[in-house]
Length: 163
Picture 1 (cartoon, helix red, strand yellow):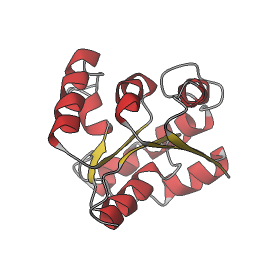
Picture 2 (picture 1 turned 45 degrees about the vertical axis):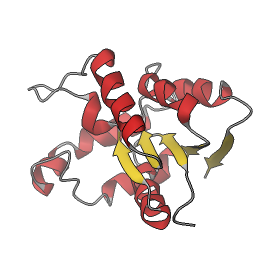
Picture 3 (picture 1 turned 180 degrees about the horizontal axis):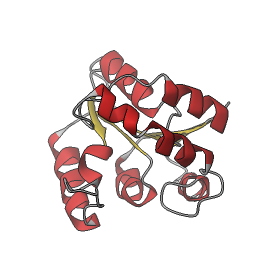
Picture 4 (picture 1 turned 30 degrees about the vertical axis):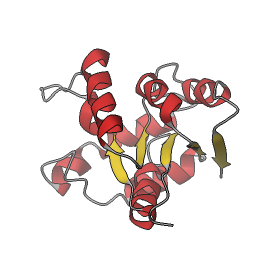
């Protein structure tokens, strides 16, 4: 139902399908889509994380400006700011081989890279990043995502997908 108010959060490893699912849900339910990658980083060389306070302000403005939305990303620190507003949470916990194959087939992301060639220059780094998901202990890690999912309120509809 296109006019149904929905507030959905999707998170998981790089290559898990967050952007693909978010775009599908956005089209299907007429949801405004926010990819946390676009607000989490400063435009600098090398890239640096934007202060949480700045990202938080942008997230609050987005939530207040949009009745129905889907927000996706891998940032447990930013996702924790969004979770209280969500009525549906989807944790895409796919195995690393699936995520790696998805990353290799990833279409050009013009909101992140100036060209497809520039995006592919980062592919080797991305594949290593995906492989380390289960062993890292940062805001992008499996352990951070598991804590985030475990701490959800019981009133939220939650889904956990492992493949």
